[in-house]
Structures are given as structure tokens and as C-alpha cells.
Amino acid sequence: MKLLLDENLSKKLVLRLADLYPGSAHVASFDMLSRPDREIWAFAQQEGFIIVSTDADFYELATTLGPPPKVVWLRRWTHPTRDAEFVLRRDAIRLTEFASDPDLGILVLDR
Image (cartoon, rainbow, N blue to C red; front, side, top):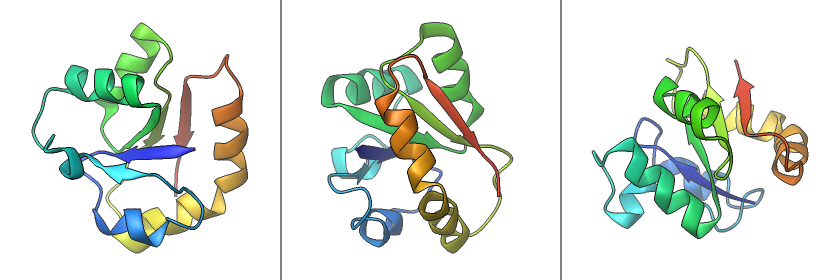
């Protein structure tokens, strides 16, 4: 399962989570900072990424368009990078189940 981390999350998470989510990347790796959400959506869809964001815009796209791509929304997120890492590690099994269920398009995670 490959995660595409949105610009509102730290690029450091890619390396910190590489053991659980190999092949993951940050939007900055593809020169997609400040690109429109729909462009990031299309890229994630084409490349087989699951979008991880603290931005409700991707949640809204997922409810409107449906998967793929799938979206992990870190809701009401104002926490440091270490907390994002903790949550994505803590919920790794939930993410794996979410990724493998074709009927699910959104996973909402809170601290």
C-alpha cells in the first residue's frame, strides 16, 4: 500500500513510515506543492496511491467522486509530525483492511 502525503503533512513521514508503507511519497516529490486538489487526485488515481491529508477537501472529493483513489483523512489535525506517525502506525491494520476493501473510499482517523 502506497501513501501519498499531502502538503499539509511533513515530508519526513515518508522515511519514518517506510517500513510499514513502502513506496509511499510526499506530493513535493512530484513537484505538486500548491497544485489543485483535482490534479493530485488524478495523479494518485493513476499511480495507485492512497491520499493522506488533514485537508477536508480530499474528504469532500472522495464523497463526491468515490474511489479510486482512497483517502485517509486526519480529521481536526493540528498535531506535530510525531503524532501523525504514531496514528498511522497505530492504525496500520485498519489502513490495510481499508486498502483491501473495494467498497470503502474514506478512512477518518483522529488522534
